[in-house]
Length: 324
Image 1 (cartoon, rainbow, N blue to C red):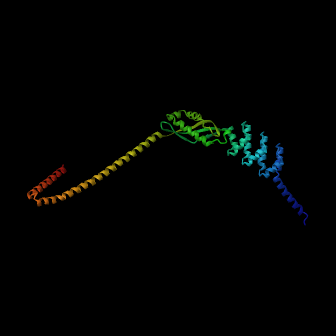
Image 2 (cartoon, rainbow, N blue to C red):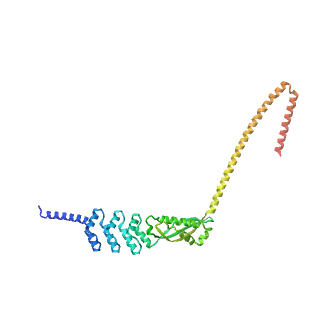
Image 3 (cartoon, one colour):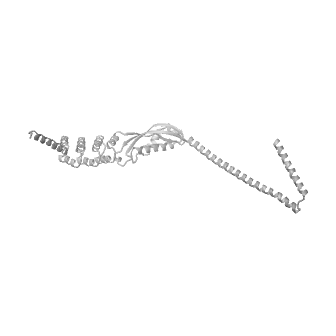
């Protein structure tokens, strides 16, 4: 057997054993903690491995927080990590709040983080307020003129209301509602154009930040444009609707008249049929009268002459009317 094979095998096993040991026992992190005067035992770090907690995610934020003057311990950070929170973000937020002299406890920061909000961004917004720009809001004054308004809302995060408080969408909706109400209560659109700050004062006085996670510092009108004449357009639409209604009613009356005309024509045809029927009975009545002796032959000829004379007179009168 080669004398070098046994020592090489032992060396490989030793390296593997050392790697496994250093993986479960983070000696480097323990030394870093000792160098930073952070009191954490090596057995505690091994326990984190057993509890499936990444020691680096606890030790490094703990060192950072203690060096910044915060009162933290590994149990707090580990519990927040196991709850699914962002430990590093929470510690950064606590440091920022501590430097800005904002009252923020670890429990508050952890609750805000677990609620799904960015606690570091909230602290930064408390120090440096954020400007929210609303979309173009259409409002109509009492004289029917449309105004298109854009506003900028300066807000500051309210740490105490971050959990359970409404977000930016609610602020934008409430500001839009206030703008529509203020413009709608103005007699003329020129009143708003002359004093745009009237909108700001009125909307700001409504307490729109109630129940939200923000505190409104100011509302500034960025732009006011004149839009359509909504009043005139509504009147035009109403007139067009009235015209269509009148046309529909006229068409209804025309249809009724046509139906009545057709009905009268049918009635006339019916009467003419009765006249023809009555005329057809005249020769029979004459024959019966002649047979019964109630009518003489000369009387019959005189009646025919009268009828012929009447028809001739009617024809002459009709010809004269045509010539005239």
